[in-house]
Length: 321
Image (cartoon, rainbow, N blue to C red; front, side, top):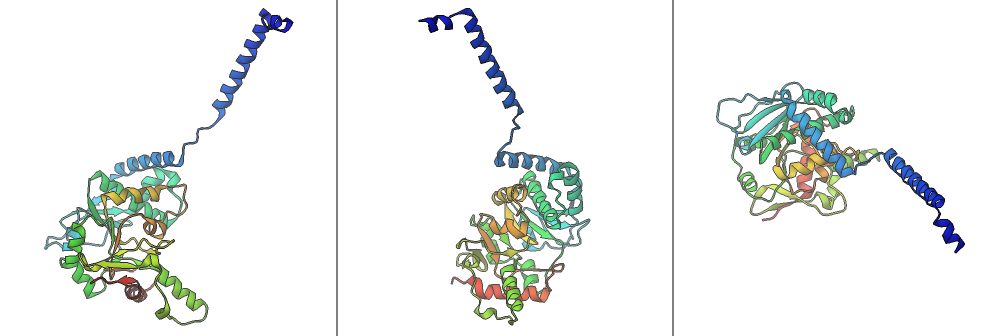
């Protein structure tokens, strides 16, 4: 009874009120000092928005590319848009009925460095990757449903490749007409074979790829309804097939979204387009059974590129009659 009487005194009620106020004040001040850290998803969403704004305002990076007036090459006219990547200008010239742009990589670099410096890592590979990301943004802006990306240093070095470019490929036409593709790679570099070759040489052996078995994730199957000129890359196996090269490919609108996210995800260090991104793209990825082109600026000779391409076709292609 005495304790209850004490608590009911005016003096005690004032002390309790003051203590409660003090605790609430400390709690509010402590919370205000906490820095808000958005989730990875929110950060990526904000960065994507900022990147789109920068690229859409970087109009000088995209110039309409002059095309010749002769009959259009069928391969390049089968898409809605054609983007040719050069550093300061584009030497590659082709006739196309599609909207054709020269994408100046140096200008893209300058726009990003001045507006989004956090993306300027100093890496040449990532700078090129951001040019590919800029193309995806531009294609979205233009509402292109399927578009082709060509790096300026590709070289059609065989009669077969030149004939594929200039003639209407039945397989190519059938594939584009389906909904069974997201990414078509018309050129690629089977780097896992180059790695195997280097490993053999390092151990004093000769090139003996005859005993080399294609990894499950690199098996590529043709489809009878499409034809023999293209194959669907397997999604089997625990790893991703190490196919390098981003010099000649076709994207559709759906796949561009996911690839853009992978290119801009700064929380991941592995985001060079042909080193990690295309390999890990969760899309239906088709390959030309024999790549249409090689590159003149690689650390591997054109002859070796051809050789590894032939080995890939020999060891990894599953032909369906």
